[in-house]
Length: 327
Image 1 (cartoon, helix red, strand yellow):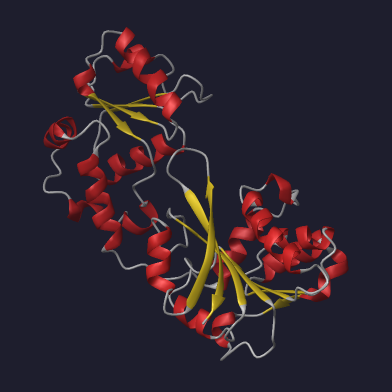
Image 2 (tube, one colour):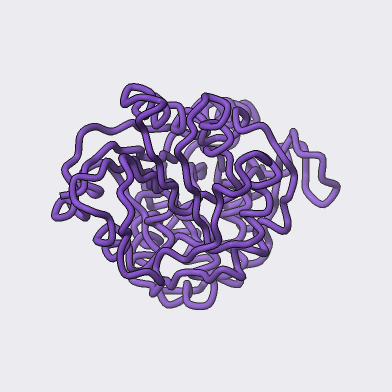
């Protein structure tokens, strides 16, 4: 009898599979009806012999569809559990995840899974404890150069998952005045937000980043603004001496160890528009579960005006955008 079945092999299913592999578990059946992959099964009847079946999807509608398909096969509901997010962070935990489980016996692990809640609350707690207690260090410029080198394609910024957040920021800047706003974009990356500002006729803008590959892409996207981009590591300067009306810090604070130091360099009374996520990705050294955790961390440095929550695919992943003023 196969021990564990995985039903659904998108990002969430692959995440759970990584956990099982890093725990050295065997006899795993993977089933996905929609994935064109000859190495996995496509008919859920293959899961009938499994001792435990884990439905893996971040989407509530698919969760119910997958459940009904299994029940129609007369699979007992008692051996079905749901894994609905990428709770395991392999690039931080791969080498020490075994330390967080009382047993590495696969049968006992399955029994623990089956005695857990349908949504695997206990397993989630173990994985959360593991990531919170693991030392995470920020990546250097060479890491991000490799990231941007892998994907040099020039895509329209409107197709980005971040586009609604940039619209939120653009609305704030537009209300201040296209001709009045003087913007510093810290960690401008490949220049999508800059391109958006250019097309909306803003003209006082400077973007800085410590990845030369990112800046090369940014300059290619908006050639007439190529002199608006500068190779600079914000952590290496003592303070931001030039006065800007707005400083944008999108998807940066979660990547750096010294996030307080970055904010401390900003002059008092400067408007700040920033974003941080509630999920881990490679390079994230921290996450923010909700607005309250953001306020708690930065309240000594910022006056918060308002927030915008950008919900990504699934029901869990969010990016929090906030409008604030430096104290």
